[in-house]
Length: 136
Image (cartoon, rainbow, N blue to C red; front, side, top):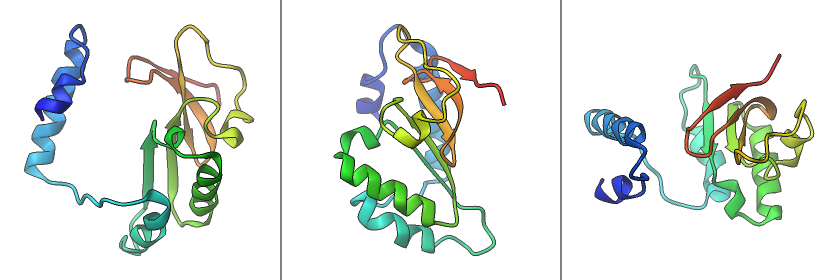
C-alpha cells in the first residue's frame, strides 16, 4: 500500500483519499487476483465466470505495453468472448476504437479513450482527472 500511495502525486489529495477508500474495500472483500500473461489467460479466466453472470473485462493503460501483434491478439480474443469489454487506453492503442471517434481528443490534456465493446463513449484523464462523455 505504501508503494501505491507513493505513486500518487503530492498535490492530488483527492486521488490519495480515493486510493485509501478502495484499499479498505479490497481488504474487506479481497478480489481474486491471477498473475500471468493476459493473452494466455484471459479466455480461461472468462470461462470460469458463472454462466448466468454478465462478464465484464476492464483494462486501463495496459495494452500500450504490448507489441502490436499481441494487442491484435487480445482484440481478437475479446471479440470472441461472451463479455462486455471496457477499455481505457490512449487513442492510438486500439485503432478500431480510434477510427470510431467523432473527433480527436484535445492534445493538451493527454486524453485516453473510454470505450465499451470498441465503441468510444468518453475521453478520460489518464489518472482520472476528467471524464468528458461523447455525444451518443
